[in-house]
Length: 279
Image 1 (cartoon, one colour):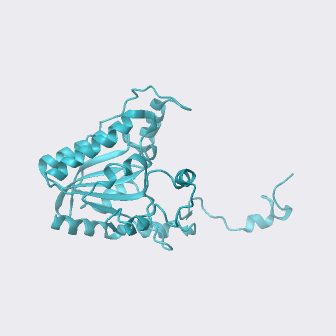
Image 2 (cartoon, rainbow, N blue to C red; image 1 turned 90 degrees about the horizontal axis):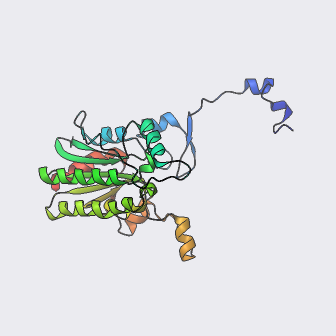
Image 3 (tube, rainbow, N blue to C red; image 1 turned 45 degrees about the vertical axis):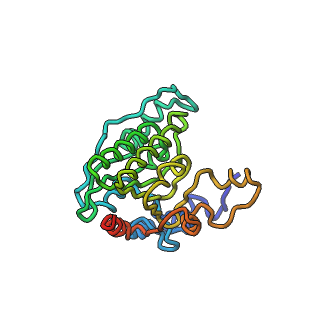
């Protein structure tokens, strides 16, 4: 039995007259659920024109947004993860890594390097959510630590942009150890009075939120970003209560003192420049 009206069958005259919409021309906002024109979003720095939700952007777009043109020099590009647990679920961790490396063109979910913001030299670390959900494994933790150590040695501010689902389960306890490792690295910056600024993008969750993301001297979020440790359904099932509206959104966290500021994407570079000039 056909699951369409006879008058609207694929080969009918009516269906042939119907205008065709190119695939990918429209997208649905993750926050307001409105259907919006993709090119309009692209022209607006990947921001929803209806509700101001900030869509995820690539590492390259993030670097171009924050740093002076041509100033970024990437470090540690060959640092690659291993599979010490020989972990296998529906497929082996080794196969998953190979597939992600081919898809993204990088070894793991972290990019670090040096650049400049309006002429001020900084060390920048950016999570890549496109690589296994930006999960923090041994290489991600190691890169954050190396970025922090080089920032400390050169006394350059460290700026970290997070977008992550949390710890990488395929590395087990080795992944969880990165929480303590990265926290210790940024603590050394604090002791030496070297600025550390964290920018939380949508989403920032799990062990990343529970460690390095929330340790900045200044913690900034993009509007309407989801930030938390466990997901809202898990929390509701645990406490047997309904969560308040807007729970785990950046605006809720700002109201309750968990972050310092919410800054629109188009103002991030100038905000960082102002902060760094005072720090």
